[in-house]
Image (cartoon, rainbow, N blue to C red; front, top):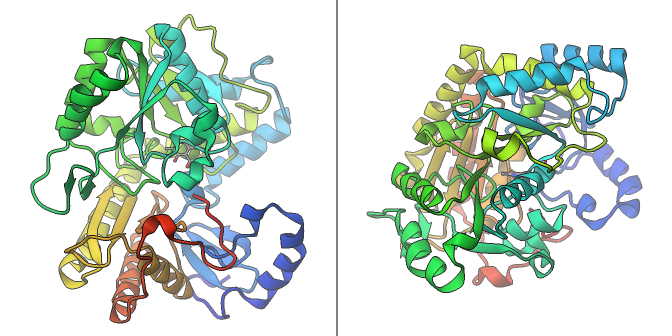
Length: 470
Ligand SMILES: Cc1ncc(COP(=O)(O)O)c(C=O)c1O
């Protein structure tokens, strides 16, 4: 395997094409979509991915956040393999075992203030389902306040209907789910009531809650909880202000709403602190964990809660595959990497490097509208021009495609215009700097001859062979 990104064949390469010829005719439509990742992977090492044609890419996706310490962190993999040999598969919900007990203790030891309890779960989606159930059970109230632009999963009806990160994602699931009220998520660049750059105060979103939503749509005493991502991830890396959080948590206290923080993407060190809630000293009632808690081992998720919400609940969050011994052992080894001070120090370097390299592009390139980063969650927003700030999904896609040809695999999704990077928290700085500099070259290249953009975002169509997925 090349020890540095290097693309030797056209993409997709001949072997990738051959394999897909046997795969596409037998899988569902979304699995036939190769537009965004035009290769078949054969192995990973650290932050490098090799495809079946021998091309090597730097991995800025990190298993969508589930491999925060690189592809195969040795302590995690050893712990997983040892536990798998020792226990095989086990139903932890019924037959409890040592790795589960160790993990529960470790998660509580790093949890935000006020969190004293943990519940097993298997995926981000299930953690969200459980968090919502817990809030309803704890308050006896029906309604959940959620925010437009968030992503909470799309496999269950509840999570799909609250995942308004592009309306297509929810596949009209909201028709089957009641008990939700929506408000816009704070967006410093594209606020619905205040467009464009310039003075901006995101407490206007709380004004909207108080002066509109709670007045005209739902009584505050009907709301059980607020389901919110502390930093909007899939929705384009938006970071609310301290003033926003102060007023939102003020409403929670005033009206008895449970604060349900979806830290599936932001938790376990992704934003430079163990939990994103630490940036604002939040005291959540319920914290949802997924992705990073797996540490690159086996699938696992968790719901954390306060004494009040969880000590005497009847809600069950587990399930047959939740917290298998191997998954718990891997996640435990992951907590040890998280709490090594070098890990958070590297995340701080990632944020500093991304902002230093990308921010000057805002002045240089008319299509680069905004650069946002918190820890190792990084986004670049593309527009047609700064006057209209019209989203530029075609520019975004062109950047992504050109970057892959140079060996950089970031996060793109059809129809979006914020290019995202979520490297391993432990990525070597030299490789990350190279990735950022390569992206800068690519953005300059695309800006010389920008592609035509859809006139109307609502009428944009997926590219040939692409599907409307998140
Ligand atoms: C914030 C957030 N919540 C929930 C989920 C769903 O997690 P999963 O895909 O494990 O079901 C995701 C996945 O991207 C997410 O980003």
